[in-house]
View (tube, helix red, strand yellow):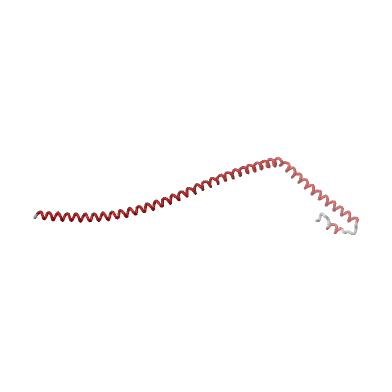
Length: 165
């Protein structure tokens, strides 16, 4: 009788272990499915990241080419600027030389200019003096003519004199 009980207890334990084993196998199956889904998700994410990385690399290559083109353009502009600066400096040097020469010539001729200015002033004064003498002469001439011609009144002679004008 004890053996029957032991056998029944052993069968119960075996059934319990088998039930636990079935549950564990179900859990393992669920975990395996989750693992497969996670693996698939990771593969898709990896593929997506790989595609993004390739796009970023292409964009980086395009940017590098553009940057190289811009650097070449900057170098050309720098060379053009240097050439312009050289031409400008040469032109400034030429102009400074011309100015220096003209200044030297002007300073040499400065005494001549002053001499001519003085002579012009003298001539202007002499011209005024001659004009005054001419007026006096014209007045005297007119007075003499009037004294010979009694029909002209002294009043009209005074009003037409060059001195009153």
